[in-house]
Length: 371
View 1: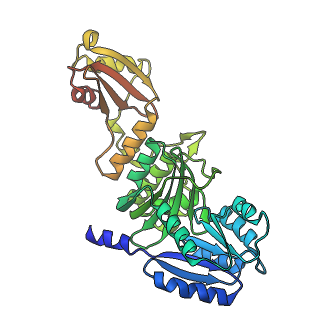
View 2: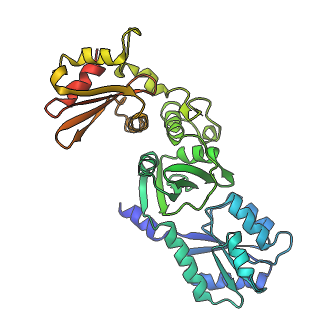
């Protein structure tokens, strides 16, 4: 733990400064030399070169001039907003005109400064941006899948910056109300970037309490992506190149998973199964239950549906991750008066049973999941 904490304290943030004025680049590099324990300055003389650097390097912040040849600051802002939406941009210009600041900020800039530059103001702005990246906290040596489950269940809106602790590669996930809106890895966006990030095992997570994108690029269900990612890592030992490819199975169709992960198929004997299609699932369940509870007195309700499908998918994912076996069932104590028991069935349906508090949920689950 001490090593992880030490690494967080000395984490260096890369800053890309773009300006066609070489003396200015030299000056700002010299100014930031006194802050080298926190910031590393990289420079570019035009927007075209800056885009190439953004594709192959990890930057926390971009600082740019407006008036430049080949690609000016306005065009660079548009490109960054479209392809690198998680990287904030600070504009510094000597050509200040009425309404320039408002136009620049509407284009996507986080802050606007004029030359001659007040260095303390710039440093304070950069410090605020870096703090914002971790305002929701930072987790070291974390399980990405586990944390993503919590984001979805709590319907959080946030931006998560992910650092692969093994390769030091970085990626970003964008969530709005628990939905995965977009993902970025280098200059790759969308589902392909999400699979790349989910291929990493142990990561450091930095959480920003806002989603910096407003357009949803990823339409696939998050559970489908997570389950397929875990299946690929667990069963196939998939390489990062394989995670760049679109999944060939288990992709959502009209909001539903087309086929279950292999683990679930191989262990389906732990799910409720119906041998006689002429008999309803409810009747079969009651027949099994009568050996462990008083049907007339203790059974409050029993129904089959897909209300709990999201919960059972999440529980299945956790079981896969911890190698705890297939999910058989769960129960909830309702005000010490009743127990709600949920058991997955084959397919996407599940059975919900409400029994009196004196009934043993473990016996109920066992009676329905064991032959």
